[in-house]
Length: 401
Image (cartoon, rainbow, N blue to C red; front, side):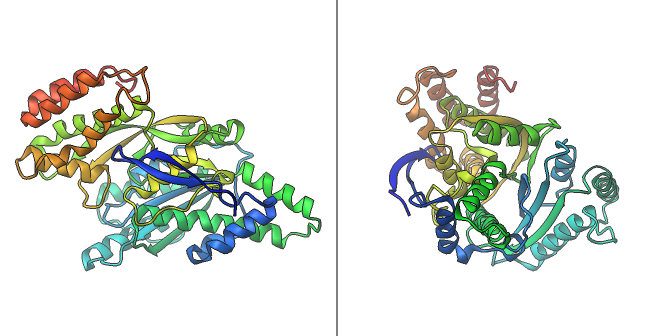
């Protein structure tokens, strides 16, 4: 498999975690790809692996079934302008947790049918909401007019380990697709097969795009592809939070400012690994698998891919809603409960972790350790207006504001 090396990356919470690299590197390109696919057969998604058409740009949108119909992110993606010579595949991977209630099953079905309608896979518009229904019809027309050459796959998978499992299943299936393509070709010599694999790996990009991410930049996906292929970079999102939805509407603006500051502090330290996330196919099989039992496993996995590589960022926006699984949305929920005197200071652990990193690994930072300490002290005081005011002062240093 290769000589594995253990190093460390930051996870979403600002903790240093061990990762490994050096996998599947001992043999020629054909042998390495065979080794990878043999080791990951259990993650195969047939609908992806069996397709013998490998496209340049592969947009993977993990969809959470509890979300409302995702017409906004679809609109953002269909606004993208692609080079005429670049083929595009869009995969919607609907995440179906095993403990779905009947209500959530109905939402999942609505999401799936909305996507099928927009992408011309069913005739009937399933949306009863008048405004959403009109928008879905407009998007259906836009897809037919501007992107009808794109391949679209809508999957519904039972996923036990959230985003990390989706990443591992999709990546493993694309590797198997690449092997199936060269295995089915008439190329006979090993050297020719190796060259074909190298060319596929170098010119194929996987771009993971969360279902709450939007962009106004019509060239965002094109720029991502060029950064990955031409410059061998790994791409992440430079995320601006436009809105949050918590169980206490009076705290929403304060929570938005705290979370945006948290994103900016990590960006300042060079440890911001937010969605969208993209790399060449070649970048995926030399690092350890997604650790499905590890918190923030998808983010840690991509942080490992980005180690020792140049990184570029694309500007995007998002909204945050409270969640219960380890994520930025769970951090926001904990902060809300802390501000309401319903949770102890453990809710501030992620901010404390970032504070502890200042002055250790990077000196040329926008923010000082003293500023962040003062910000945390204000949060401890639980006075939302003061927190919001000071946080906005900090955000004026950001290039997003």
